[in-house]
Length: 357
Image (cartoon, rainbow, N blue to C red; front, top):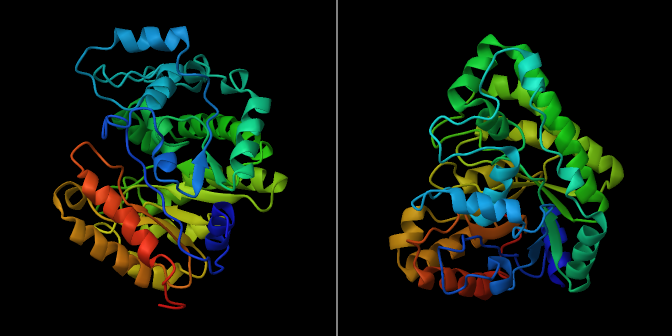
């Protein structure tokens, strides 16, 4: 199978020739590879394209130069998105829309127009180039950590947005309506460019529970996610939907399946049991991640990683339905030997997954 065919098989719950594998790490995690995408370095099956303009543009470089020397808030693409939104995490309690409680005050500060920065033809060419080389292509609209919940609280401030959810639901509805419309437009542009997988992100949970109640998510956020997915599927019914949230989101997994999510990421094994999730939802949902904790990647041995990869293949990988990947972004503390061992183990056993769990 070509890499793209392998990914498509997994997301369609068909048996691949072997399980795909992915990894993500920040440039500063492994400075010996400063200019290499992790997916390209290890020849992973999926390539990423971006709707962002070049990171070298003068206004962004000026923004980078203005930051204090000890600021550590993310990669250059993340900082570029923060810059466009007017969000400055290095400034205590900075929130672009944090002042005022009236809809008119929030409406007076328009959201950034990313469509003006978008190059549809260039985006389409990038997608087609990767696909001609046999890779699946994935993209995500520019956001502040997540399309809805995370962007909203970063614009309003976390404490203020949590208060808004209780005391000012009309403002919340207005803000989410604007964000949803923006992300429908951006996601449609990505879909029309021919991507295979649309990545939607929103960290709505911590390790032990959700940051908001499942009922609040269902009432307030679920319709927005449904709208984005439905709009894109109307253009391409075969588009795969990836959804990311750290933490324990077990209460809303059936809701995600209902609105059309195909693959769940990162399925952190110290937070949710990936084997139990496979048994419960494996015929309707694929999984992306499931391997390791920050402690294991940093201080575990290659044998620890090898054993866990084998266990995931023999359980969560049963029948396919798994894209093997670290369940966390790899930080500078991670041992390089553990990364190479991960890929070696995935390549050795990736074709030996059982037909059923």
